[in-house]
Image (cartoon, rainbow, N blue to C red):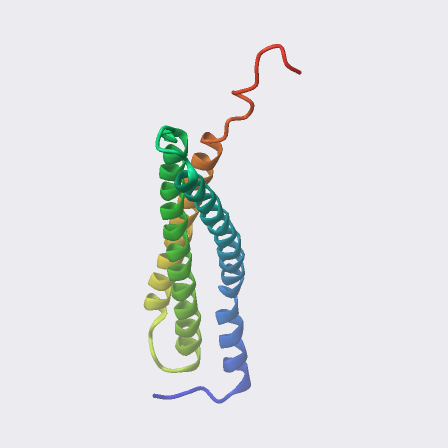
Length: 153
């Protein structure tokens, strides 16, 4: 395998490979945001589970069980989102490596780089759909004052 030794080729290879790094920054930000949502889901589920454990057997706690079911669905969506974002980051990292190697060696792997990049972007878009679904479920279970009596201000 031949590696380029001239500075122009290596510099161009670095420039070409650095462009997808901006997507990695977006993925890292999304993972942080989604992980924060997962932490809140877990905290809320623990509160509800404690409330159910302390409730008397006369009180069925149907609302708490329903909310736990919704939290379980949200948690599954968030976990899927994190997995997709992780796969996206891996695909983008492999894209960077393929672009750099394609530019600085005799290896013809630009088609592989294209495929890896498209897979990474597809994972990112699917993760965004999971994030959207989770936020829709989260806002749907909010009461927004439905229990407030009419006439109260």
